[in-house]
Every structure is written in structure tokens, then in C-alpha cells.
Length: 66
Image (cartoon, rainbow, N blue to C red; front, side):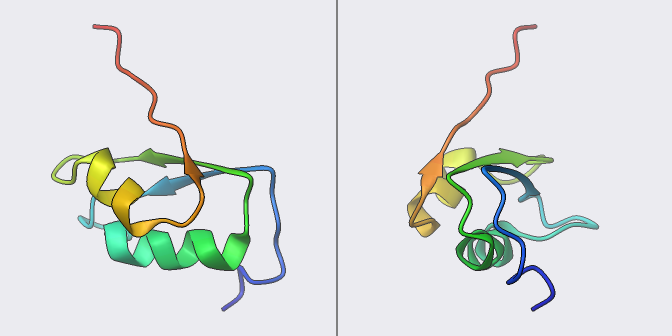
């Protein structure tokens, strides 16, 4: 609830669920934040596409260039 008063242009949200929010919790946080763009991170076990399907906002997935 403390994030409802923050409205950033870009939000980087963890979606991994291991010591962080999981994809469903991050989607709820994204809705509270009302950011223009959300970038999922710390997605060890969760596919970014899963998060994208739960979000009603623009989700940008950064590719790892290894």
C-alpha cells in the first residue's frame, strides 16, 4: 500500500519470488505504481512473459547480451 502514492515513469520490479515479489505480486505493485513502463528483474525462476501476461501496462524485457 505504501507504493500507491508513487507514480514513476519507469519501475524495475523483481518477479522471481525467491526473497522478492513473485510475478503476481509484482503485477499488483505495477498496478499500484501506475508506471508508464515496467522492467521485470531478478527473474531466476519466472519467465518475463508470465509477468507480462499479468500486467496491464507496458512491460519492457531487457535481453542479457552474454
